[in-house]
Length: 110
Image (cartoon, rainbow, N blue to C red):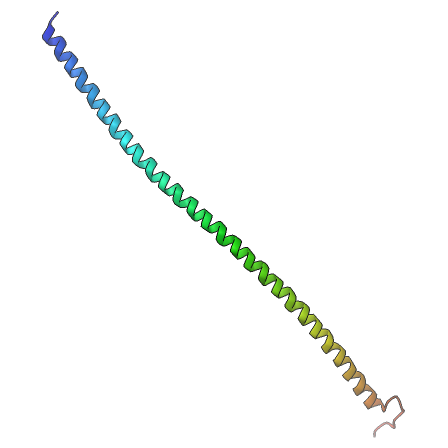
């Protein structure tokens, strides 16, 4: 058995193993960096989602308030329209009676 060739073989094998280990470490470092980046993005998305949810809840409150105001306005408008309709009907009755002479027969105009 040749001791020198065995030592060379062992050293070459060790060098190849170290090179593979170095490449694996480099891959692990790149994977760690990617994972860190993904974690930052997920954290930013979580913050944005939380902010969006809060803003949406506030917006829903504003929409409910607006809908309430619209309903109140509609009720007020319907009441005002009803009053106007009653007054208009009274005016129409008044004009009709005036034109008919309060129910008296008038001579037809020639």
